[in-house]
Image (cartoon, rainbow, N blue to C red; front, side, top):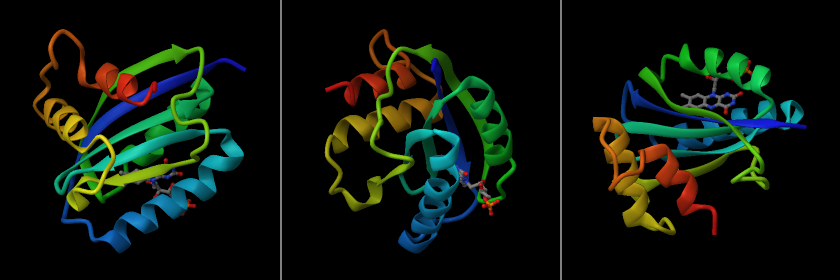
Length: 137
Ligand SMILES: Cc1cc2nc3c(=O)[nH]c(=O)nc-3n(C[C@H](O)[C@H](O)[C@H](O)COP(=O)(O)O)c2cc1C
């Protein structure tokens, strides 16, 4: 089945604790699995960056729901394109808390989320394209 990848950035409405992030991830995993949605969520202490992968109509509906969540605001779609393969095939929702400073590829990810916040490119690539490239392996 053909899939799309949607990437958005949003601003957290308050500081998220590790428990808050786990709660979001658990709900996302439970809901995304039967929808055939995979992806990854990044949080840097103030902003979220999320990659959602799945059938186009499913993603549109899911994004509309997520956008209304009061835990974030000012959500902005950075990328919404067909993809020939998934970047996060094994994750119904992965979670990376960049506050931990433990993350694999930490420096690159910090740069991507900051560029997304301020709507600037990294070199000639958009933050979303850079993000997907980081995980292409
Ligand atoms: C940053 C962020 C990312 C989220 N990602 C997802 C997601 O990928 N899938 C999902 O179902 N819900 C996600 N949610 C939660 C939804 O906004 C909503 O609370 C949830 O889907 C409601 O699920 P329920 O109807 O099972 O209670 C996210 C929320 C936030 C704040």
